[in-house]
Image (cartoon, rainbow, N blue to C red; front, side, top):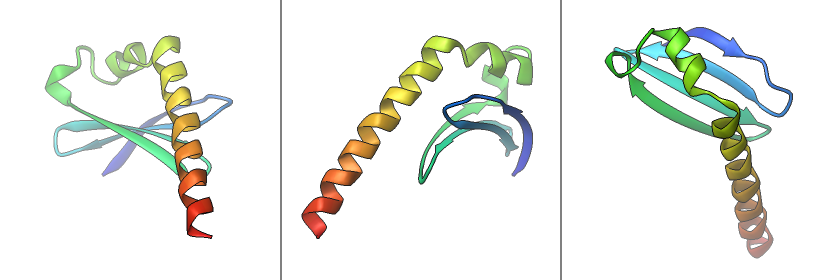
Length: 81
C-alpha cells in the first residue's frame, strides 16, 4: 500500500492510498478512522477524480459519522468501567 495524496483539512486527516488496483480513502480523527475503497477503474481521472468525489458535503457527512462513532465508543467505555 502506498500513499498517493493527502488532502489538508482542519478537522481530520485525509489520506489516499493505492493498493491492488484500488484507491483507499482514509479519514482519521484522533483514535477513530473511516476508510472507503474504490476500484481504480471506477474513478474517472484517477487521483483527480478522487478529489472531485471528496466534496464538502461528503466530508461533512464523514465528520458527522465521527461524532456518532465517538458517542458510541464513549457509551461503551462507560459501561465497561
